[in-house]
Amino acid sequence: MASSITSKPFLGATKPNSCFSSDLQKFSFSSLHISIKPRTHKKLQIQAAGSTFGNYFRVTTFGESHGGGVGCIVDGCPPRIPLSEADLQVDLDRRRPGQSRITTPRKETDTCRIYSGVSEGVTTGTPIHVFVPNTDQRGHDYKEMSITYRPSHADATYDMKYGVRAVQGGGRSSARETIGRVAPGAIAKKILKQFSGTEVLAYVSQVHQVVLPDGSVDHDTVTLDQIESNIVRCPNPEYAEKMIAAIDAVRTRGDSIGGVVTCIVRNAPRGLGSPVFDKLEAELAKAVMSLPATKGFEFGSGFAGTFLTGSEHNDEFFTDEHGRIRTRTNRSGGIQGGISNGEIINMRVAFKPTATISKKQHTVTREKKEMELIARGRHDPCVVPRAVPMVEAMVALVLVDQLMAQYAQCNLFPINPELQEPLRLSFPKFEPANI
Image (cartoon, rainbow, N blue to C red; front, side, top):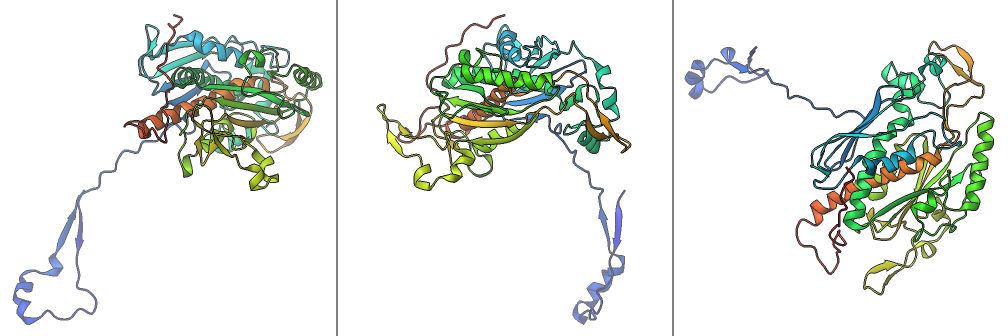
C-alpha cells in the first residue's frame, strides 16, 4: 500500500521572492504529495547453525546418539577420485565403540553406506551422502538424566540454549556425531595423500599422569602400524602399557581420566593458510577444538616456547641438498605467519575426563531441585584412544580446504618458480576403487 507525505513550509522560512511568487503560487507546497512504493524485503538465507564446516570442501553432519543414525553430506569433493565405502570404513572402525576393554562397551559396527556422489567407483563432484545406522541404543539408561543434569556435560547448556533437548545418549552433544567427521576426513586424507603425498597421523601422548617424554616418537618415521599396534594408540610400547593400566584402574572405580592427542602432518604443501584471520594454526585450532571434550590446543613449541628467548626459539634457515629452503629446528611447528612452510606440522590437543561417570555426584533437576545422581549408560573411561582418528579427520578437513583455496588463488596462473613450489609433487596414481 502506497504511503503519502504532505510537506509543510520550514519553520521561520522567509516569504518567497516576488520574482518567483507567481510560479510558486502555481506550485503549492501544501499540496505536495510523495508516493512511496512498498519495500520488498529480500529473502534471508541462514546456514544450519553449527553443523557445517569448511568453505570449499564443505561437510555438514547430522543425526543423534540414539536416533535412527548419523552421517554427513560432503559438498565440493573433486570429481573422478576412486572412492568406496571400504575407504571410509578403515577410520570408522578405529573410531567405533566397543573395540576394546578401555572404550565404551556400546556395540556398534558403524557400517557406512554411500547413497550419493559416487558412481561406478569414482566421485562425481556432486554432494556425497554417507549414513551409518544406530543399532545398539539403550534409551532407558537415560531415564534419570531426563530431569537431572550431568555435571560438566552439555545437558544444562542445551536446555539453556534451546529450551528442549534430546535426552537419550546426549543427542548431538554425543561423540557419536563425530562419525560425520571421520568419514569425510578419510576422503580428505585420500585426496591429500594422492595429490601431494601429505600424511596426517595422530597418536596418544598422555593419559592422565602418564606422559610420553619429548623426543620418544620420531615424527619423521612413525607409522600408522606402530600407532595401531596397541589399544591405546601410543606408538611407544612401554608407555602404552602404563597408559592402559591407568585407564583400567579408573574404569573399575567407575571414574574417568583425560589425556592428550598429538597430531603431525608430513609433506604438507607450502603456502597453505592466509594472513590475519585465516591463519592455518587458527583454522586447525577451531577444527580440533570443535571436537567433544577438548580443553586445550597448542602447536609447535606451544606454551613451553614462552620460557625461551628469541635467539633460543628462532628456527634458523638453511638450503638442503635439493636446493630447498628448510629450517634446522621446528619450534614453529611447520607454520610461520599463519602459512605452512613445508616442515612437519605438529600440534597437541587436550581432552578432559569423560563427564558421565558412575560415581555419585551432586547436581540439580530441571526444576532447580538439588539431588544426587549416579549416571547410567555406557561411556568411555578415557576418550583419547578413540579421539585419535577424530583429530586426524578434522586436521585433514582443514588441510584439503586450504589446499583448494591455495590452488584457486595462487596457482591458477603460472607460479613464480624462484620463490614458489608446485602444490602437487607428481600426478596422482589412483588405485581402482573397491566396489
